[in-house]
Amino acid sequence: MTLREVVTQAWEGEGAELYERVRPGYPQSAIDFIAEELGIGEDSDVLDLAAGTGKLTRALLPLGCRLTAVEPLTGMRTVLTRELPEVAVLAGSAEEIPLHDDSIDAVIVGQAFHWFDRERAPREIARVLRPGGGLVAIWNMRDESVEWMNGVREIIERARGDTPRHRDGEWERGIEDSCLYAPLELRTFQHVQEASREDAIGAFASRSYISALPEDERAAHIRQLAAAVPDEERVAIPYTTEVYWTHRSP
Image 1 (cartoon, rainbow, N blue to C red):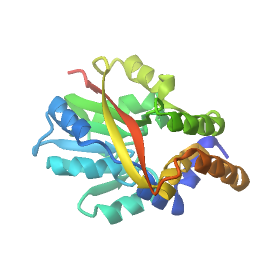
Image 2 (image 1 turned 60 degrees about the vertical axis):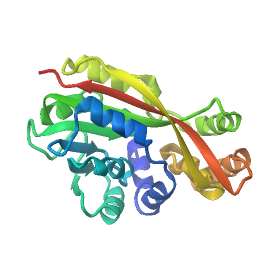
Image 3 (image 1 turned 180 degrees about the vertical axis):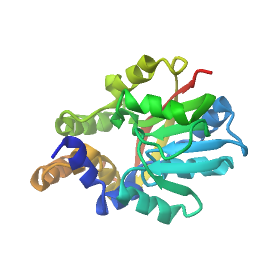
């Protein structure tokens, strides 16, 4: 079984429910910036690609745009449809988007672009984007300047292995090499997730590469994470939200 297949299996059933419960949303300041920079309004057609359980979808809804969510995993789509029944949810992937050519004003991707095929996905996204349409990739990144968060990083990195990561820059090179987009730009925002201690531990343990570990190894990592997270009833988890954006070339 490939790494992608193992991780896919981890996100079905209870894995999707855990993701929905413990993963952070996105700061309003970042959503407002995206809407202004891309000119998203009530007349805009927007695609939340690799939408997961709808963390980003939920943040985009108040913009009033015509919103479509595309997600490849059945477990994730099940939760998304239950939580946001007003949103059109389609099965599909970044490499095979079930939408017409030139039909979308903006494609927004939360926490997932590094999983896409670096050659096929940029071309497929460009196919559905209207000329000049916007593309956004957004990540909530742990703020590791906070001492205990740096300890969490050390534990998580031991489990990462060859899992794709957005820091390696492959996804950026894929966009650049396609010659279909303007140069990427970046803006950052600060974000804090307030969670119970149990959910804080769950947020870190829900990383795909930890969820995919054999049960005994996963349990050992969770024990280490529990020791690293502050022993407080409510935990403030600090993030830096990175917003990368570009536009499809006319």
